[in-house]
Amino acid sequence: MPTLFTHAAVPLMLGVATGPRRVSGRLLAASSVAAMLADTDVIAFRLGIPYASAFGHRGALHSVAFALMLGLLAALGHRQLHSSPWRSLGFVGLAALSHPLLDACTDGGLGVALWWPFSDQRWFAPFRPIAVSPIGRRFFSTQGWTVMTSELLWVWLPTAMLALAIACWRRSPTSR
Ligand SMILES: [Zn+2]
Image 1 (cartoon, rainbow, N blue to C red):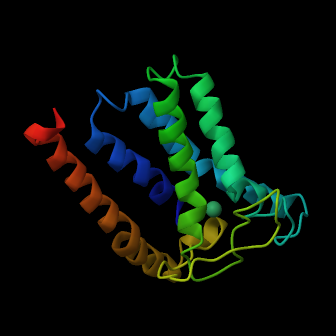
Image 2 (spheres, rainbow, N blue to C red; image 1 turned 45 degrees about the vertical axis):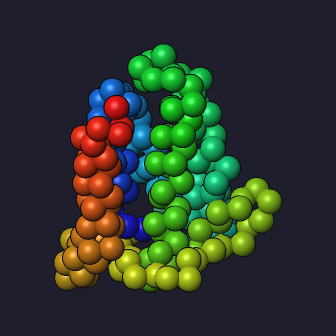
């Protein structure tokens, strides 16, 4: 996985760039949580569930189905998120989906069960430039530096550029 704060940073940066009129503070917070939630499945290691199992790490919680479920929950709670049902579904759903897609671009571990429950097969993207983050405390090791620089280059930088483009578009007269 990329590190948790990198997962959260993607919807945070894009949401802030989109502006509070379209993405409320609560929607922003919910989408950041949604982007991190998939990795709660690391508890599977403690429970003795094998990595490659459907409910192991990068299994069911790293699927399109799980992202869609989080999006639907957000749509149901759209009033609490101070947003419309469709916007809540879209923003939280895409934030959640960004998690397995980024994991699929990492250079280690197993792939993600993107199409669970229809298939348990683990999937990797054809292009995997992101250095995989060690699971647990091992992050604070020499490998941590490699992971940080890799995430800055392959996740933070492109996301920041996209956020900048969105912010510029917002300021253009055609967006009003
Ligand atoms: Zn993950």
